[in-house]
Amino acid sequence: MKKILLTLLLIQSAFFLSACTEVTDTTTVLPTTITPTTMVPPTTTTTLTPTTPTTVPPTTITTTMVPTTTVPTTTTSACKAQGYDYDYNSLTYDLVWSDEFDGSSLSLIKWRYQTGGWGWGNNELQYYTDGANTEVADGHLTITARKETFGTNEYTSARLNTVQSFLYGKIEVRAILPSGLGTWPAIWMMPTYSVYGIWPNSGEIDIMEHVGKDLNRVHHVIHTQAYNHQLGTQKGSSSVVADATEAFHVYKLEWLPDMLMFFVDDTLIWIYDPNDYTNCPASNRWPFDKHFYLIMNIAIGGWWPGDPSPSFEMAEMIIDYVRIYQSPEITALG
Ligand SMILES: [Ca+2]
Image (tube, rainbow, N blue to C red):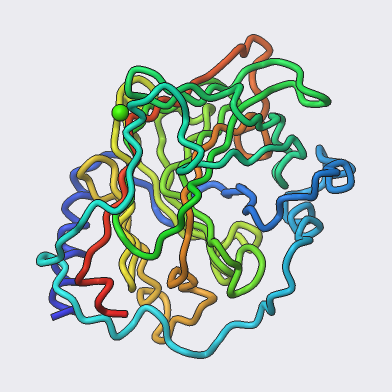
């Protein structure tokens, strides 16, 4: 059953890929250099600021910023993402978590601010504040990046994490992306606990990334121990969403026990299935069997997006809702 369904999925995927213009090859995605939360520095951030950020490559910086965990980085030999027997087309889903942003303030029961201005391992320029760069009104959450001085940072913005974490499910975020050179919005997921070791060993799922210098190209990327930008082996894909910075689209992840499916609206853009690359995926290719939380942010500057233009003043990401569904059939698989 699984193989038949997978075949159907791949046919379906091929159809969508052929129907979608300008889908790129999975090996050509630009490096994704978002830094995981395990690398968040202590409150005295200056000690972790790159000493020569304009010349030190990301790999070196990231390596020097891994202070928080002692979890071994060795991987298990057990095959992952295998042995799950389910009928994809028969799965049912229940809404288990959502924020429609219908109120007048951000729910701090659902979200927490991640603050700081230390470059986040990517030479980013913004300081993430704890409320001054977000607004909830008219059914929307708006994250605003601004050119304004905050300490030693020349820009401010916000980065929000869900308090709750999740294992498998559908994650849907309906959003209008910001535009402007140097902007780097992301909707992504990081592991709650680094069970398989520090980044990238415990994984990172980038549901949506966009950089202003490549307007309207939406990226979907995963990082693992075997596949990550430090090695130049990250897996991902992208497509052009012609009005991504002007109109709402739904950026969706379907996270199954054996594959990750990335959608824009109802169009399947890419599937990550580690069995496509190896006969017995271990955690170095499939760390996605642990709980992850969702992150939404706008970074400014950094190695991938480059500097904003001198005329940059502000940019907004408008989020209509975040909805997370889980399937009892998948949950029952254990
Ligand atoms: Ca809404």
